[in-house]
Length: 325
Image (cartoon, rainbow, N blue to C red):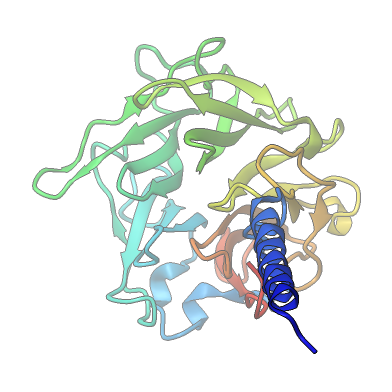
């Protein structure tokens, strides 16, 4: 026969189980490396971007076309090209009405972004503007190619680019900076990029934002750099836990530049051992300046020589695995 004391005991037990379950759930959500964990399928066989989805045929030309990257909303495709209409290596952009629509014909961004010198490696930032690299020779330039930032005003267009400053206090150096990648982590912001020259193989660096638009000294990312390889042009996923970059390290196809990837459980962890993306992406040609779309399901990169021009733009895709994240 059940008593009131027995019933109160059973109710207390049920409440205890509910609270225990809630505590476990909260612990799982709070555990580093578990919250927001994302899994993806393998990358598909890369295709020339002008041969996909009705995209404009002039996304690739007989000239050098590379450094591709989408805007965060997926409606703009920025690239670098020396096609007719360029002063040197210029930044171009193709637009589309929706993420399901094809990209239209690229147009030159013009001054003040482009100059008589090489301007390349564009990196659009949501609501902020555009980072890019320029070899313009102006007072205050640090070296071969420096990182600049420009904002877009809907009424007046692109503003005069701002130089990010020289080492040791800023990220630019006497070498060639390439592939700036902006990522917001833990309430702050970081800028990943590479440094190299014809005689100095590339290494990947990171600089932390120290003020309104200003970035501090660059620090080499040891886990991503190989002492004998050319490690260049990193691009970091928006959550800061996956990075793709170009390298000719051991394991690359015929010692050419390949696309490699590294991941980490949380932004406070070191990067894992880089892995070659394999034959669906990499070939005996040189793959360079990879970039991930905002949802990380698309990978853009350049391949030189391309079947059409000096360098062509390619696209590979992957799917997010159901239940991940």
